[in-house]
Image (cartoon, rainbow, N blue to C red):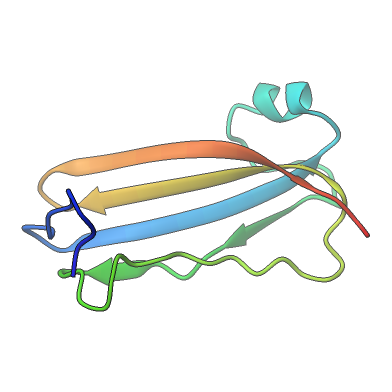
Length: 100
């Protein structure tokens, strides 16, 4: 069932999510222009794509599990929602990973 104000998709949609980093600071992350990290310690993690045509069971959620060995730093979290006939919408956020 969709949350208040949401409508079910009229066509199949695909939800995608990736996380790449770490970057030493926000300025370095932003200057990367969405390119995959070049340093050997930097990684890109991808959530399994979600393909759906309904909101049965609630709005779908993408999950990316960070490995216990994830290095501290700033990471770029990118999401995309796409439908074959209506294009895609995407966005990104910066998250900070800290070691305990």
